[in-house]
Length: 257
Ligand code: ADP
Ligand code: MG
Image (cartoon, rainbow, N blue to C red; front, top):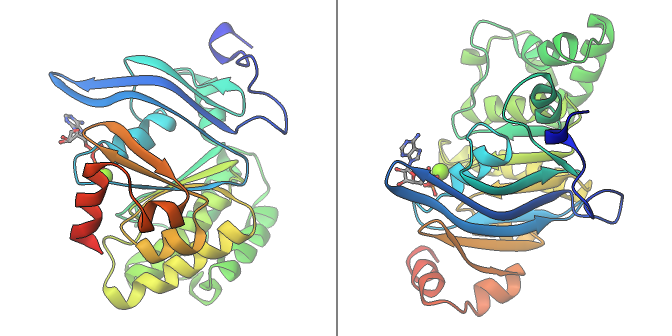
């Protein structure tokens, strides 16, 4: 293990937070998109991130998974700071599942292949074992009967559930979902949210960027409200929705509720 992946003191072990974000700053050129972000996510915790468009929610998610670099600060997962590149990065990144707004399935692979590809290639699972596990996961998200189809033959809601199954196939320690229902037709939103509520109940650690306040109330342990690259407010959902403290949060909630 090299220095860049050495455990961060105080962040190892079962009682420690799974994700530590410590004084993180990030610019895109002149634009200061993450400003002194500091928070932690406990094992099994479900954190919902909300805030106006452009407030840095996606950038934060991408930084946690090292799809974006950060200028300063520390992000660690299970006690390990993500290096910026190399084999260690690939390994540590597989600890984090990521589900995007635009399902991002491999268009030329079947549903089943989408779920087995990484476990076979990255984890070295046999095809048989990977397929057995994949079918269990497709069952769990309610699309096992679509396994042989190509993604384009599925509805948006089904595709997004496949994307969730695909991320679970790598047995991640954490799942990041960035507006997973924003691209869906309204009648498909609930089938995806139901899967997410199920994951939350099963104890999966989740960071979810969403405008679905019903999900936040039902499943979140904590809400993080971001505005202009800062964490403006962090609270339990009840407290946040019933009694927001910051003017920005009050204004935001008045527009969406
Ligand atoms: P959110 O997800 O909250 O809508 P983002 O994290 O996507 O916000 O974006 C935060 C800000 O950073 C926005 O002003 C956006 O335009 C800008 N931004 C995002 N990605 C890039 C990029 N790759 N290059 C330059 N600016 C970017
Ligand atoms: Mg975004």
